[in-house]
Image 1 (spheres, rainbow, N blue to C red):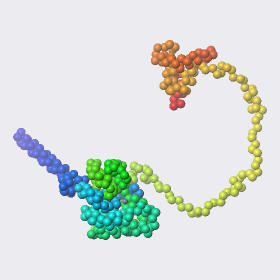
Image 2 (cartoon, rainbow, N blue to C red):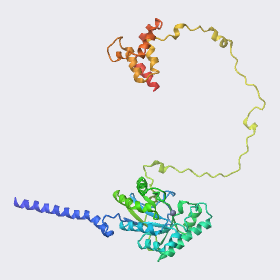
Image 3 (cartoon, protein in one colour):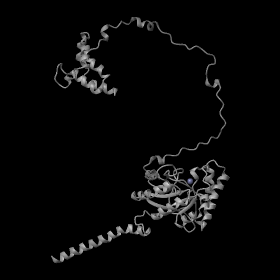
Image 4 (cartoon, helix red, strand yellow):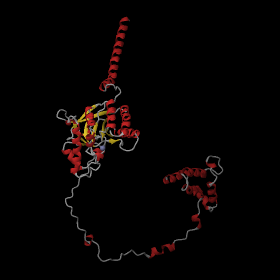
Length: 425
Ligand SMILES: [Zn+2]
């Protein structure tokens, strides 16, 4: 008895110790995050670094392109354009630092020229820095290519000049206003620069409230489930909305991904081609396997000659169309028919409900039919509906010629009536 109680006690201790051990393991995750972001135990943090090779996937962002970053569900990449502008960019940097988030910044050459320290701060904080032209023209879609090249190169030149180590500049470029053009993209790609669109903006450059920016960021992210968010670090409304966006991302289980370019020391993260599609095709999506429409190539562009009249096999001379002649029997048939008698137009008493059913609702018609079927003066439900129209109808029916009463016996029954009503519905 004593021995078995000792065994039981030992087992319960083992269970308790295992429970404490696994409990510690569970608690260990937030503790590890706190270690990742010192002083900010509740930080969202950066879950992983994605290394990409611009030459393998030169255009990304589903707002404009087929491919986007190979993110997993609930993964987000934060991007900030148009800086650095110390007043707001520094606040954005602070917010990101307090959450241990790494983002990607697209710098305007003029801003880098005016505030090189701002570029160095971004690099020192470990963010990825790409470029966004020299003067942010919103005409790159219709600009002469040499002018577009000057814009691209000016931005790269001044941003890298601001850096202590110019090799830190990522070969990432975002076209101002996303005003893409084939020539611009071709030039960037020829230089091994990745063209970044986005998966969704938050409209933070428009005159909307910070709360609206927050709502749009979350709504659009939720709609796609993952992706690249386009923001601007030069807008006060973005500074105001950012903490709330980040808190909500954490609450909804989103994770931040930091994107860096592949280098000789750091090869690209292994991925499969379908991972670069926002929603890879699945076996359950038949449309994904539908064959593409082929591109027809016309071997001859010369137009065919118009057909000659002779080709159409028509008679040149107009001939009158011969109509069949009416026979004498056809001509006299109307005269030989007897005139209809007056009784032909009398409404038989029993068929009054059929006539009413064509103008009343199905329910009313059924009630009337039941009333008509019920014995006169009956006390049932149907008997009560004798007021109004039905009474008038019966009065009219009684005024009909006598032989109509005989038709009463062959009047349509409610079941037949219901069928005829149903056909009309
Ligand atoms: Zn911009």
